[in-house]
Image: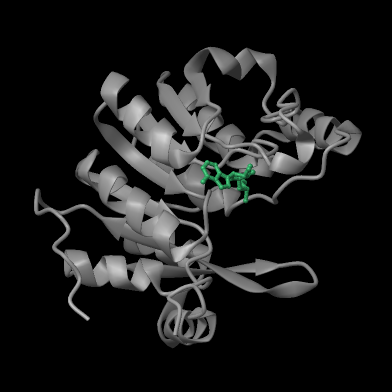
Length: 238
Ligand SMILES: C[S@@+](CC[C@H](N)C(=O)[O-])C[C@H]1O[C@@H](n2cnc3c(N)ncnc32)[C@H](O)[C@@H]1O
């Protein structure tokens, strides 16, 4: 069986031991904040920008989780994969600003259907936050090594780009190795296939699995691993 066709097993694994967003943040010693309420004016701007955007792109990650953890950790340097409208970027940048400033490095290969027109990538992010943000508009296999060459160490990682098993297995170890001890590794859509579960096995770590409810759709799941030491991911033995 292809490792990309492991969605049912991944979903069953996520469901066995998941937490709400609030409980997951609490388990890490932080408190949940509602970023859209705290930054209503900015989100009004962003919702309008996305409404006016002629390109339809991928939806947001768990914004309260990202914002609360970036704030809780007092993160300064963050790396994310997958920008689309820029909702996750917005949540991180707002938190970085409140942390006293910082840097967000993002990778994003725009959807091929838009023929290289990248004008609307990140349109949810207002100009006032862009000085803390660099987007490398290339696929992860090029963008991540390029980003890590210029900025090698991070407080927080957010993975939300290629959802294939191979895409995850390429990017996860690189991103993990760039994370400082005490930092947080967050991956979206871990119920798509067994990539995240297998990565936890490679690290010998038990993740926190966050159930993220969605309007009119089944919940999706986000995985969090706290980096406790310098051990590198070991090879997976099937
Ligand atoms: C689900 S969207 C990201 C949503 C974003 N994190 C948010 O919260 O608004 C996924 C994005 O990843 C990009 N992407 C897909 N495969 C990629 C790859 N191999 N390398 C880089 N970006 C990729 C897509 O073009 C899309 O913009």
